[in-house]
Amino acid sequence: MAYSEKLIDHYENPRNVGSMDKNETSVGTGLVGAPACGDVMKLQIKVTPEGIIEDAKFKTFGCGSAIASSSLITEWVKGKSLDEAGSIKNSQIAEELALPPVKIHCSILAEDAIKAAISDYKTKNGAAEVDAAE
Amino acid sequence: MNELKAKPIYLDYQATTPTDPRVVEAMLPYFTEKFGNPHSRNHSFGWEAEDAVEVARGQVAKIIGASAKEIIFTSGATESNNLALKGVMKFYGKKKPHLITVVTEHKCVLDSARHLEQEGYKVTYLGVKENGLIDLEELKAAITDETALVSVMGVNNEIGVIQPLKEIGEICRERKVFFHTDCAQAVGKIDLDVDDMKIDLMSISGHKIYGPKGIGALYVRRRPRVRVIAQITGGGQERGMRSGTLPTPLIVGLGKACDILSNEMTEENARIEKLRDYTLQRFRDRLEDIYVNGDEHVRVSGNLNISFAYVEGESLLMDIKNIAVSSGSACTSASLEPSYVLRALGVDEELAHTSLRIGIGRYTTKEELDEAVDAICTAVERLREMSPLWEMAQEGIDIKSIEWAEH
Image (tube, rainbow over all chains, first blue to last red; front, side):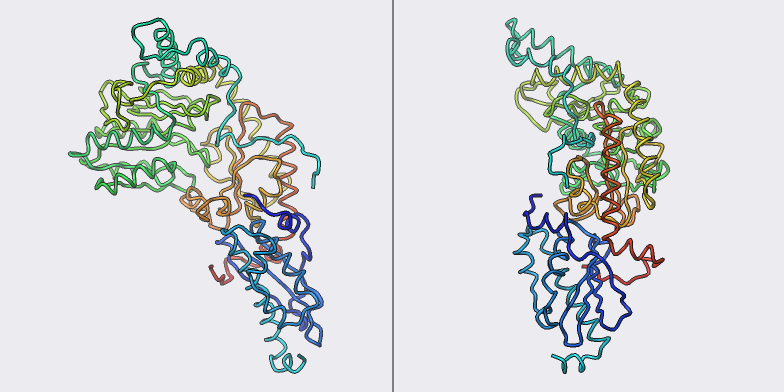
């Protein structure tokens, strides 16, 4: 399969690989996908009391497109508010990486992962408190 | 990453093989000065080509213990398999509309069977055991008075396991059922003898045995005679079973490829087996959680199919782009389904996604394998560091205990 240079760059030099302590209250974790489907993404965000994502980390089991999609989204969400990060669409990822049609599901997974991480963070911190901070 | 383009390493010998230079040399005159049509009966150009075709027919027959008259040239094993299944079923199907084959057969056998099913024939698909081999008792039980043909491949293209052809042949002969075997991956890898193994039809491929692409053969037994309905009709060449002008150069090439194997296969396979065992040992020395797919011993020497747990196959291939291997991962297939062969073995779907097929052949060197093992291991280690599944495994979390949202 012919991949774009950006995709290959994210695959070969993935940004923000790693893990944070999922028990910390400032950390939200999203784990999406399934091993049987060949894709599992773990995306973590560290959020400031002001509701800004100050750091993001990922680990992904999946094809090159899945790794690149997760790497890209960790770059994008840093510095964003939870609402901004939650509004990232899979189509933006697919476009940026020029994903071939059969790989669109990788970008959907990345969108699901950030949404799951945000939701986990909110659950941990009590949604009301976060809303107040925003 | 390596900026300099290093020479790529070919380890995909089950996909295809380079044509042996000795084969090319034998073929060349038949493109130019010896270009005659082997079916031209009234001049020397035709006779010359016909002689060459008949020599090749004998060379192909010899490697499987057949007689030259029983060899039909085709465009390849796909056509041979089509002709064997459709040809036999359509001839005998009125009285015996039942065909038995195996779930791990090559797509061209399975698809021929599907077509026959659509036309009203009955097909039984035998499963395989965990090691990839069929259960002979299951085969016996599947045969009925309506069974015309049993089709079981000699060697599997993905996992290299060798089916018990002699035992299958015995069972089929006893029950008066024809036995076809797709030996595209078996010729030159294991000893074959159509009489000893009681094989009635056998498919052979040129390009899997260092011969040219676009040529193959079907062995069709003469005594007791097997009849097939031609699938390609026309001038009635090849005893009416396959019309079309014979491609003399390709046939000469297939013959030469068989001739070379007749003389060299024992030594060649011993050498390749040593390389294979060495390679597997090196993987095991460096990596944990790797699994060989298919029986580790009842398999051809050149095939190594390994699952590298927690690392998805396509991403692994992307990392080792200088090394040509295949993966059973869904992402490398058009269907986005993981290998149906591995699934049939009962390999967990997540492990099927992590498999690589490493094919070792005539021109593979130890140095190439050393380089490949190093590159694959480095890639596996890098991707495991990036894998949430590997992280969970290291933390002692059972991946199967998690409720995954299948998508």
